[in-house]
Length: 465
Image (cartoon, rainbow, N blue to C red; front, top):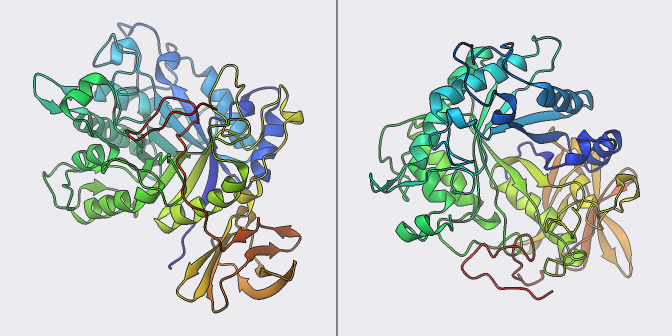
């Protein structure tokens, strides 16, 4: 299939901001990651009450406090990583619903703040680094992060319209600062909104419904209105209750195997002229992970994750995605959190944290899949390193070389090998080896995302551990 880039990143890696920052960045780089998704709290940066006289579009206005984001963005850039800045959490005076912590903001005020943030991190303000990627909110398709979703007086879902206005206001301000800045929209949660008031009017208010109403498209890819949205990247969080080929239980939810449906909607909206972007619109997975067993007995075992993770990266890439951000560098303590999806097991100090057995899948993902009577192989070299990889196959207890493949400009190598689809395959580049990948396909199995956490799908199965 036609090749394209694949960038690996991380989200939720709080270790990069503390005393272990240098080691944390080294661990991320060692895993083949070059990008960090970070969050800026609008309410923490802004005054608690809106001043009578100020300029909210001016990053130098004395009522702002940028100290936290200044330090975090500088640390990420100084370490050689690309920051993707997510702005969320409106101050009370800028909310549509003042009493709701995660109320949607008033679009005009949101646009002013985004203009101030883009100007501060334009690369020309007080020696601060430049931010090019600006993500508009987090999971706006569910009430947990974005209210209101439904307006009972109007008897319709209003979140897509509010969010579209936010995206357009932010895009205008951010592009005014620098036309080459990129707007990341969506960042949709994978499953339906399960809050009682939303379920009462639509028991399947999933991310595809939100996306299609935002983009004025119906289920068949036909226009339903003439509204347009200005963004450059669409992103989603395709958490999955199974393996890389597992579909969500509901038709409007989006797990890994449903990414092609979301990609098709995106392409249809582009063809209809409903997305305004100066370049081809990109598709991202800016948050994804599986918890692991150990430590969480209700999550996939390491033997499955050693296969599922590289296959998930391939299938995500094959769906047109060019960035994947994994949730967590290190597991969080089980006594206080159910998030056990780190690349490293939890330890009080990062220096003593042990890597999980699937870590090499991030640095050097490789798959070997049945294709007709042959074997389709795909690899992404560590950090996109150029060169020639050697594909090897198991042979009488050892390994034999079966094919040499030149890596393309994106660090991708792929080919269909006309050979017997048996045993295990792996890729070798210099002294580096991918994890072995078996031609024996394990059956799909149900695992609730985040293990013992709240069941997220209607077919969810409680786990006793």
